[in-house]
Length: 127
Image (cartoon, rainbow, N blue to C red; front, side, top):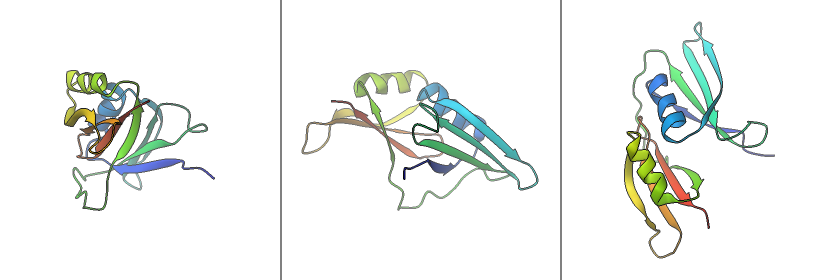
């Protein structure tokens, strides 16, 4: 068994695809549009779905925002250099909500960024 994908509901597919592909450097892997069911899907990731988990972005026609609730935490992405990743995110118009630095009580370097719908993404510097 393995994790295939995580689904996130998005309020604007174009805006979300721009963030995940241009700001975070993921690739658009495939899309599906279901007009009769009134939704569009886009799968994004750093590699093939056959090899690793990806994100499924779901846009439901006519819904431009969601209540994220208080149970959702974040998605974690490993990066070679969290400090540089934050600079890249900011340079491309993304929001850094916690600058890169050691995690409280430890030495692992982390940072947090936020996608256009408010989802948190943790950047964890590889060791």
